[in-house]
Image 1: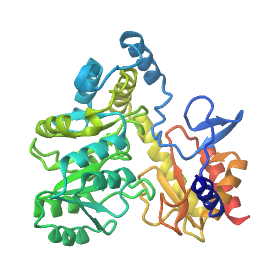
Image 2 (image 1 turned 90 degrees about the vertical axis):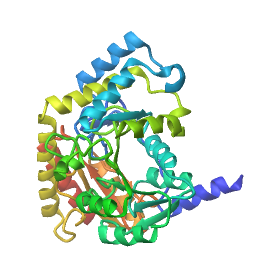
Image 3 (image 1 turned 30 degrees about the vertical axis):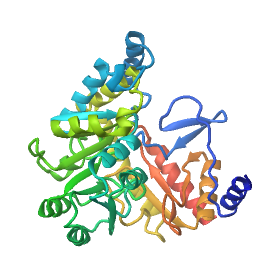
Length: 394
């Protein structure tokens, strides 16, 4: 098995070898690594809910009442009251008649896509869609077509080419995880309606973050929810802003019934533990009842964008396509080795911000993906901007 060591050596030489750092204690604006504290600027814990007492208490109480594991898949004996309660809460939060839970967002995408389309169909994706979407498309066996990022006009052309396929499914991230930009949802919806295509919106990085009350991209753009027969399918996760774990799909009751009977990553996997469901319910409740974390997150987003533009005048600061209202702020470096070096200098200065390299991003676009949380302080963000300027200039 010489290919194992050869591959690892090649990755190391090209600056693409990945290693893990062990986090000690809870997730938050700061984390402990090797007994030292670092400002964490790479977590998707956007609202800082992962260690909120309300979520911890809900998880503990649920474990005491329902036990640690669910024991089986939902369709065997693993369906418990908290699963159904959480699905109901997600459906209401997303303005849909029903919802279905998956253990992870990856499994939600893979399961839903491969259930909705197959060999006689076309699935159309944005060039920068998440890897879980691409994997779901490949597993489905449908013809996969790609349209240029952020280009509804090109989507229209691609859908014309797919006119003769039995079903047409368009899938887009709503907030793109490596660039921090927001999909132009209104014209995408118009194009899909024009061609009679289903539209699936991946809300992983928008749930709890976008919209006046954190309900996501539809609320951000002021798009009406639509009736139960709406062709818009909402996918999302509970592991980011909600602070827990799990994926979901929300839509019409007919869609959810269909997925329960056809999505293999739902049918053939053990259900989420009840404690995790309880934590997710507590997280959703906090989003609906406490606006302060989202307000603080937005304040931090505005502050760091200003600081980075001042600190990095030669580059213009964050990537031009990044949105000033999302917590993902990419700083493009280009070369993978240089990105690793800058990340290492930041770590020495007390900031955890790993380099993002191929294959996660295209070759030549390695970057630092800054990810903000509500609990970051102004001093932490000012310190990071100064440290980044030093790391890039030294």
